[in-house]
Length: 391
Image 1 (cartoon, rainbow, N blue to C red):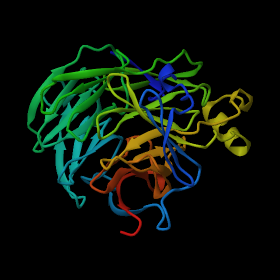
Image 2: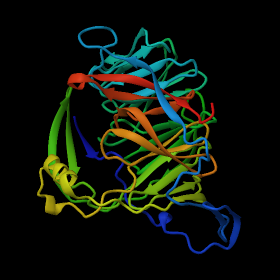
Image 3: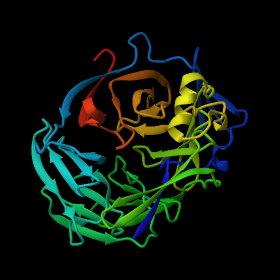
């Protein structure tokens, strides 16, 4: 079977939904530095200057408190972790793309075993592409090879299997999100939609959201990758060649949308109503010097083919407290630009170690759980405790 993967995975086009807001109808709140307005249609617009609003105590800090991984054949040796999940008790689940299994670790990092394996039977995977934890006790696993979702309990028992009628396309890692009410949000690349389902091991549809369509982008290289019996055709485009849209789901179950060329986050319902726009007064940075040459060399193209500017943002992450963590770096994340539940810009929060873009870091239980690379590029799962200012 041949599956086509387009990279970057989150590349989608700017839609009309992200048009710049017009002048406000009513200024609700104004501070020395942050302005909050209400437009005629009811949308709240929070406009932040490019300076932190955290007050004298400053932004939170991140402290590494756990590291999992080793070299060799130990039970905590990691190969190609593409997706992470953390349950309510702090157990960590790591989906390994090459091994087609899910490693399970205790909150202290002890190996507890594995779930699934390569195969075609119940609880087995043709190409494990992503996992998500849904309270109170469901681990969802996407099999891009067999086009199905499998639901496990914490002990590894298969609770449900849901075949999906999709074409041969994959997202690595697959985009699955769980909101504060426990609803599952699942991306369907064949439909260009995010689908919302209820809680529990069933697939009870609650709605759908059309992701803005992308224009055709110039593809520079294609590469075939073998995964088991599947052949993956990976297509790569010129870095920063056109605006993209990044999206995520916030704890309220609404979609967050942002253009990569405009630092504005748009909270939109499944019905298409934009409730709030959070802006940061920051233009896209220039792409120049050694960085320009390095990116061109990595892409295998002349530097003159690259645009003049980089993206102003790269990815959107959300945490259960309603904070938004925005990645601005194209490669491993060194820091996040953080906004609180009001949409106020808290500041830049640095990570003590670089966090890989894949798997997506998981925010929850006062922690950031992600993957970092050690010596010889050996992957490690790390947990960073979020220490609030004054805490």
